[in-house]
Image 1: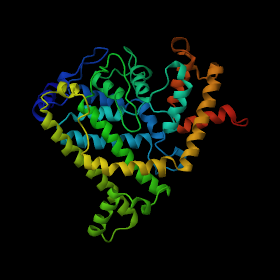
Image 2: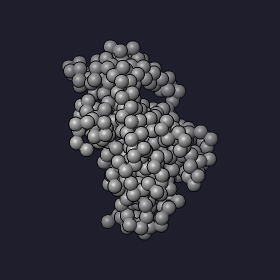
Image 3: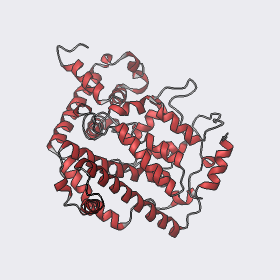
Length: 384
């Protein structure tokens, strides 16, 4: 039987000196007796998985709105893919897998319905109240909005997971700064892994969905050096596979190539910096987990391609604009008539204010629930 004490001993033996070990955690905001057979980060992971916000990710948009088909990625499948990639990188670098996984599973809990268009709409609507940032809202979800325990609000995660949520940054996500979570420090190496794993998952799985949707074609992709190189290699090794299988194999190889490069480059940087502890990593003036220069150069055309061909595709733009109108119109109704909110939501009006409560309510909606609410509010023959 592996006790928490033995888990800590195994971390000392198996993890690198610069890993964030559970014995060095700054603890929880509300002190709790810890579990005898789980580390603090394993417990955080389990609390996140059992949260309502995590379950709702199943019906929140990645790129394609949920009703467009059940074969596209959602926030939930994206989150699981990020966690899988992040675990692989953490293991390769001998970092804390449990902490990495917990941050990965929590990094999108605060996302709105309809993807980044929903976040942009709420950010504009909440401009006078400080705006809307999905990292900060993810923290609000785990600190306040989730109600699972009688002794404290939220799910009382450790300092390190909460810091990882706030400081998460990628091409699509801006890190936030909040007093009490060391805004002057770099995030842990485990958080940095999640940032990169998020980008790898975005790029490669959006390629997959883009090909499935027909918005991008393999002929377009052959113009990209990284895709063409892998495609030619696949043609030499696998001559009898169909197009669907070939697409899968290339994307799998694309992920593996980037992960391998990342681990090797980061190991070399760590060796040069002579990191001795997790504090050394946090005191460094820039991120340590990164790709090689050659891989960055190969990834840049791919990212530009996705931005131009997929994220700015007219179908995606139309859906994004439509989603913003949905949210703007619902927000206006709820703010002007807060009594139209469900009773359990109205209970927070005096404490948090009308706009913040409305923002919380809309941000927590799934795509499907938001579409149903819009119909109830604006379609005359729809039952309310």
